[in-house]
Length: 118
Image (cartoon, rainbow, N blue to C red; front, side, top):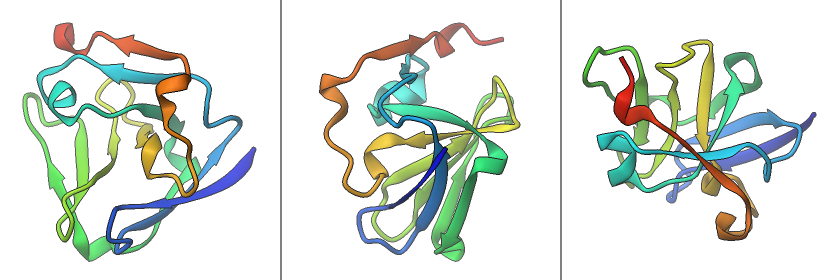
């Protein structure tokens, strides 16, 4: 796996993530929150993701059953990652927050049916 760096728009929140290939196994979710965020995500083990700066600028949003933890920068508002409800030992990273990432429109992006999560 390779180490990638990323961050929010204002670069206050910075993170590293270990990925085999940042262009594979991408997804969108159709739950009410993710549809409004409109982002492409990639799931990774929580041990492969690390916020390296800006912890105090991360805001947490939780809803529904309060399992998933959605994080965004309180300075610029960009959603960077979330701890998954489906698997709390994973984070999903906003793939467009990776430094130097090309726009994922050309990549294959699956759909997670979060709308029907129990």
